[in-house]
Length: 481
Image 1 (cartoon, rainbow, N blue to C red):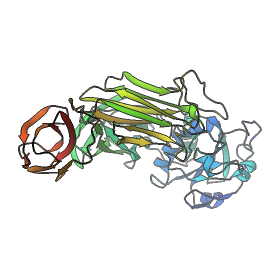
Image 2 (cartoon, rainbow, N blue to C red):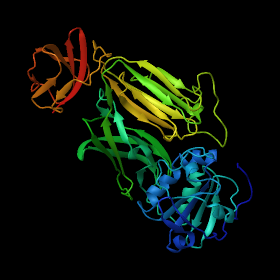
Image 3 (tube, rainbow, N blue to C red):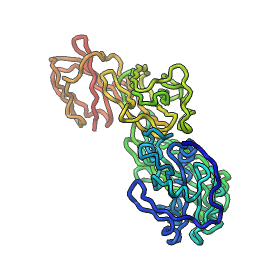
Image 4 (tube, rainbow, N blue to C red):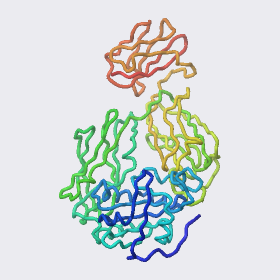
């Protein structure tokens, strides 16, 4: 299997009919769709084609589908057709033998597998190949890879989509579907997304309105010069958040002709926390161990520790073409092996654990995965299959003076969460109690003699109780409501 070239059906030809079922069980018939008056865009790709996964991950067709598909103006149908019957669902999902990544991750497109007959009828010249079919006469138009503006212009000029003079909208955002974890130390979230100009006139200014948990928070202005059907990456100013929050950004544009594409929403959660000054990273590789790289960076972007294939790094990710393997310099991981590394941390600092993959499939969950743990083996976070890069933010509180070699399972702290007092159940008659806040600051200290611990004076939040007795120390976390 590989890339090949031949002549596709001539532009203007009547589109050959085909039928197929997508991965969700929905049936599509090309001529029936055209008969309903909707234009059709077809992405012919294969699971083993490097340029196909590269194009797929630009989410260009997801942008079209979001704006002009059934959830937008409902003027178009966009179909992704996997055109090699010798591949299977595992290949499409990035876990098979003939795959360059997961085509099913982070997309809303209808995906139809085993569509080799349809590809042959269109005489596909190479993969990926794109066709736009006009419903007025069922005529085809072939487009080569990455010819974005030409596709948009063809759709407008042939009346398949309408175009207002002013129409600013958001692009397709994969992470909008995912929880955004932010470091608890910062308590701020930075919304990032692509701004598109779907209008006929150049986009020079607009306003973003920001809502947190449904309540208006603030607005930010944007100015520039964005030509029709071009896009620009937007990074807004930090938004303060407290705990789990829904952050919504709404475009406010004068004369906007389409209000259906003006909103982007984020589910924001505070990051994981560790009370220790070190973590253990464990990587269990699959049958393609050399694809994997990871690093831990501090809040200044400095790499504290890393492992795996340094050539893959954070740059050569998700770009595996065909059967090409990544370069494997010294330090690259072997396949089907387990690697661990202890990483020292500083107190009250935010860190990012970043793991990347060359082909873009992550680690096969049936064979391995990754996890970051404290000294007792408690998992702070973990994962396995992903698209090409995953970031986990976490905060190191690092309560100093703890004897981490002691078991804590026989210590009970209740109720948790608590409002006014805590009860400590431990086989001691007396101990020194110290309470630290989220940033390792001491907020309470007293002698404990089996009586409840008063905490009504504390503000709501996460705290850590340090118990010192008989030349030993233990730590327990609790939440003050």
